[in-house]
Image (cartoon, rainbow, N blue to C red; front, side, top):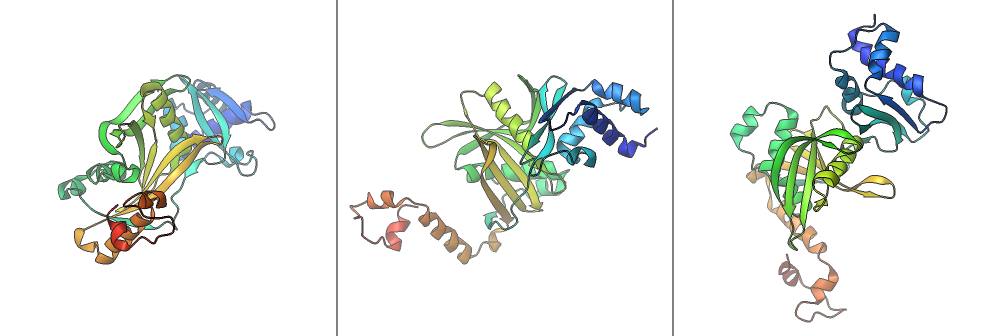
Length: 294
């Protein structure tokens, strides 16, 4: 019999290769196929069949024999297409990786010390730091409230989905938002499949709200990468990425504050500046006039 260490790989490899046809874009299978695969390979059937599929969707790379059958620039992922139904399909962005060249933004750390001390794991610690530091509000510019942790539900044509935390928000115009958040520690990878599921979750459970899935990952203990997504002709794409460094108040220097103030000024539309006090098209706007509109 196969050793436990490679049992999952042998099962998923068998299912893929049994159903794959040359140049196929999708390979459909069911969870129950694991039973017949285990029998054919003389492998002890795992007690939790779902964990085999979960592992390759979110934690572990697919076997090399599967990956090498993907065209250049694409990779195989496993998508859910119903209750206990799945398909291998091709995507250009299977994983979401923080851009190491992106500038950091310092935020005074408001996480209570007792929470920092007793956080049990990276994911829970990350969700706590995001919540206590209002990072979803800061990142999106929308006033947000945590609705529920680890929301697990069923959506049409996809089956069961789960998201780590759901925020509800409202902007200055009164528009209401839903922000499903996927969180990962340093050793795990964010996957595009989870973001696709979050869009499906929003459509099924919050159709009247503006859906903006967010992904978060620890890059270091107090350095958090945040992504927000949208859908377009190419499917799910990253709309924006920011890196927030949580620091003690004394680590925020006057130079930091001056830098952020100037960057904020530069984001104010020129048209808006000219509309105040009759500023003309060709007139220069002083620093003091800029500051009035922050």
